[in-house]
Image 1 (cartoon, rainbow, N blue to C red):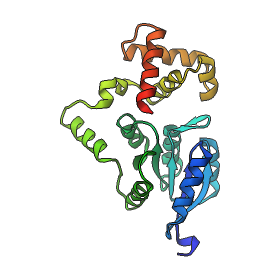
Image 2: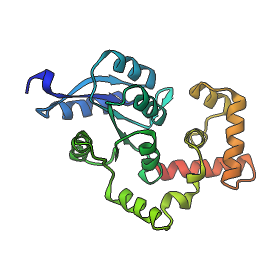
Image 3: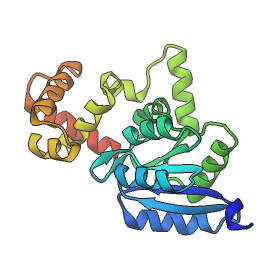
Image 4: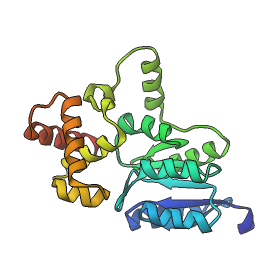
Length: 219
């Protein structure tokens, strides 16, 4: 198929090896083409401003930024671009958040490459792609049952609070979190207090232990 007729994909991931490997797989498809790669939100938005893109494949954890926030921006600025999340993070916690942010699908990195291609083609048809287990989770929620994400209690956290919880679980200080997210230390402290209250955690030590456990569950 001529290059100008192929579906154009942008890969947004802070791991170069992951991007290059995925690009090699995608470019083997006769109707797909990787038109750009980015390691963070700013670079991705620069490419979107100058390069025609049909699908953006985005990781949640990005260099100096957050994939969910990027997807929200893409949905607002470039509504014709369909976003697909490809991440290591637990889909039971993040898939619904990704869809609310504007993504059309969610795939874990542990899945086979064929699953990514299936998801891409499905969202190109205007459909949504999630795993069978996530679809069942949505059904249980509608039916009034509990899910694994609710068992963790993180469903009460905002996207930013969940992002900070991940940073705490990685052992980052308030200053390091603030620098990474481009917010003030005071804002980080406020979010930490909100997280403790929502998760019924009494002390900073309780928060740290919870965050470490949560980060391990995610991986």
